[in-house]
Image (tube, rainbow, N blue to C red; front, top):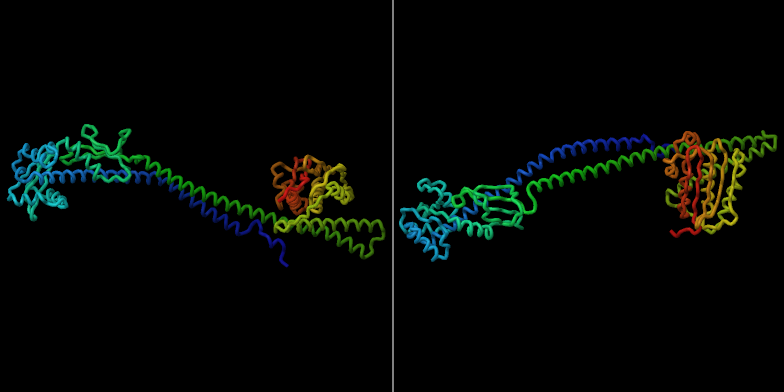
Length: 515
């Protein structure tokens, strides 16, 4: 049959060491990773800010490109409406009349003319170039040096049949650019989903020409100075409507920090729970080992005494009848001690398995106390204790399990005897208080420190006093007392101080609450 101690976990269980090593192996790298991550956040935030700023700068670059493309397209449309003859003459008053006839603003251009030596048919064909070819003409402009661009004027190279036919020179008026061209572009052509961006166009001196949305301040984060002749010196400003780039970066940093902190918190909590469980299991394993050793000793001592006295009686070595009677009393006392110990262990086993059952009935609680006192008075007084009992005759009945309540009282009496080595006085008192019955067992023993008064009801727990460790016990008595009282809908109270003894009070409701 295997040794009982091998059936329970030891305090130095290798699994506990492995888990502890695992905790350390996870905690140290995770801590290092968190430190590195927190240090990397500022650099990542700086990179994010640069990325957002460059994105905003690209938006302004494309806005300028689109405005320039729109300006060239409008100039080409006007040139088509006027015709190459008037454009070649270059007389501004005739051009303005033609613009009015075409339904275009009279003050649309400060200058508009056509330069070229190609036949009129080629010029007319060049003016009718499709709008999709405008980009090709712009590329041709960038590589053609034969048609120098005068300062302040735009030049649009016109081609027909893959040959340069002429150059359209133009300069929009400030009134048209400010009052119509820019406004129509932002209202009809500019793509700004949900109005997330706010763009401002201003004169070189700072006067606002147009804003896509009203702003309460001038905190624009990105700006660009336009170089196109039609918009020479004008400035583009951009900001985000809901939050600035700085705020976006700050929110990003906070979000990353919160995520890393949350992960660290969860990891730390998980490791703490693992570590706590390991410590609890190790402690429980140690308590189980102590329990096995204590119960083995508790069983061995009375069995040895019973066997010794029984063999002595059996061999007829006791000639004195009084001596024989004393041996019989010892055998009876030790057998009762064995019975109580085995009952405690069996009851604990049933409780752990959830199979403990109670039989409740209306019972005279005073009679239970009296029976316990009558059964144990003689062995108690034999050990030098004085027993003071106070049980009123009019104590009401209560719905209790007689055997369980008797077991709880016996456990309290045994503890009072074991832990009162000097002042051997025990008092048992029963009284009626409101709708409850109170049964108190008071001793004048070693007492219990305050920090341990809640732990003494835990299974296998034994106090830190040296006398407690010298006195053998299973560590189950008070745990069983608490379970019995809770099953009755009551509670067990303790009032104790080191060196002043202890009072344990069983508080039992007269009417047991329904489960």
